[in-house]
Amino acid sequence: MAFAAEVAHRLKTLGVDPDDLRPFFYSDVGTDSTETGAHELDLCLKNGALSLLDQKSGQVLAVDFNSPAWRHRAAGHVRGEQLVKAVFGRHKPGHGPLQVTDATAGLGRDAWLLALAGAQVIACERHPVVFALLSDGVQRAAAEPALAETASRLRLLQGDFTGLCPLSEPADVIYLDPMFPPRQKSAKVKKDMQLLHHLLGAGQDDADAMLRTALTQPVGKVVVKRPRLAEPLAGRRPTSQVTGKASRFDVYAAGPV
Ligand SMILES: C[S@@+](CC[C@H](N)C(=O)[O-])C[C@H]1O[C@@H](n2cnc3c(N)ncnc32)[C@H](O)[C@@H]1O
Image 1 (cartoon, rainbow, N blue to C red):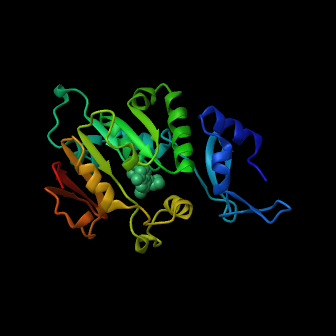
Image 2 (image 1 turned 45 degrees about the vertical axis):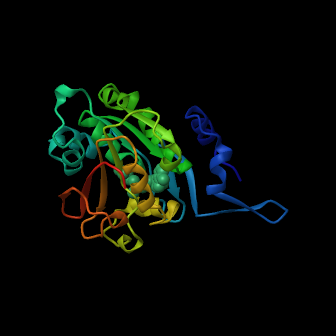
C-alpha cells in the first residue's frame, strides 16, 4: 500500500519524499508484499490540511494556526503567557527581535506562540512525520494574510538538534520541550498529544544530553519545559523558574556544563 495520490503530492510540495515517511505507516510482510498498517495510522488530507489519521478511532491530528482556539489565543495577552515570560525574560523590543532556537519543535505550538510574541524562531524537529505535519501547517499559515507575518518569523529545520550543533545561526535562547515521561499518559493528556505519543513513543528523548549540548552553545540562556513536579533535567538546578499549573519552565543562564 502507498499514500493516496493527493497525500503524496502534498508531501512533495513540502519537499518531503513520500518514500521517507512510508516506513512509519506501512510495513511489508513476507515476500508477497502483503502489507499492514504499522501503527494503524495513516496520512490524509482533511479540510485541505495534511493530517495524521488514527484509522481505528477516526481521530485526526493536523497543525492549524488559523483555528478558533489559536485566533483566540493570539488576540489575548501573548506576552503574559508563561512560556513567553520565561523565554523573553527582560528582553526589550528595542533590542531587535529575540532569536530563539526551538530544539524540539513538535507540532509547533510553542514555536508559534514565541513567533506571535515577536521572536524570530528556528524550530528543529527530527521526526519526519511530525516535521511534515508542521511544515504543512506553517505553509498554510503563510498563505493566510492575517498569519503571514507570524509565519515569516518561523523557520523550520528537519534534523536532530544535537546533530545540528554547533548552531550555524546565532540564538539568544535555546528552548527545549522534551516529551514528558510516560506516566503523563493519562486521561488528562489531550487526545491529540496521545496521537503524537502513539507515533513517537513517549519519553524516548535523550533530554539530559540535549540540555548539556544546549548549555555548550553560545547563547544567553536555555529554557526547558518540564512537568511541574519533575526533577530538573540532568540533575542541574536552574537559575530561575516560571511555574504554571501543570508545567514549569526552568531557565538556565548558559555557560559551561
Ligand atoms: C513534546 S514534543 C514538543 C512539543 C512542542 N513544544 C509544541 O509546542 O508542539 C517533543 C518533540 O521533540 C522532538 N525531538 C525530540 N528529540 C529531538 C532532537 N534531539 N532533535 C530534534 N527534535 C527532537 C520529538 O520528535 C517531538 O516531536
